[in-house]
Length: 109
Image (cartoon, rainbow, N blue to C red; front, side, top):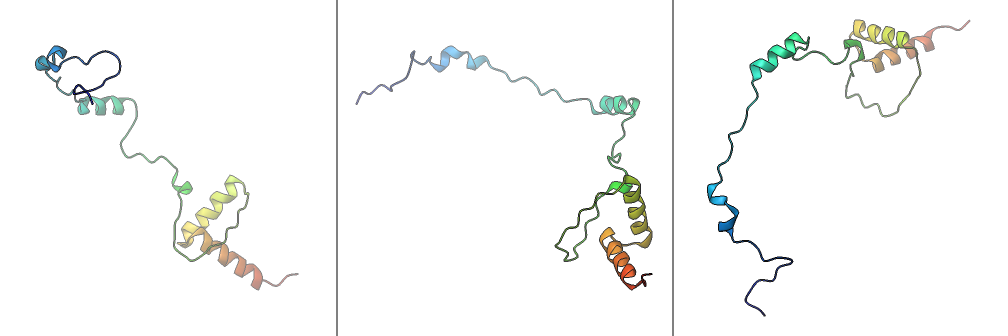
């Protein structure tokens, strides 16, 4: 086999001819955090502002429930139901179970 390394296209340029000896890295430009904070405050943005309304937060509990029941309700009824669950200090699942149990016990008529 040939001693010289095979290349595609033109012969590679020796490293000396690239001007790498004169290379000096530029300093990293860091943003001015204080200026960014001032601009954000002037624009009305605040750090840690809630993205969602508290009534629309997800409630996650480990309960062993595995079946889903999807209902279409009006936003007002959903808000009322969530407020009732919050007032009772229970999850929406627990409130639903309580409501079903109460309706089963109620005499029809």
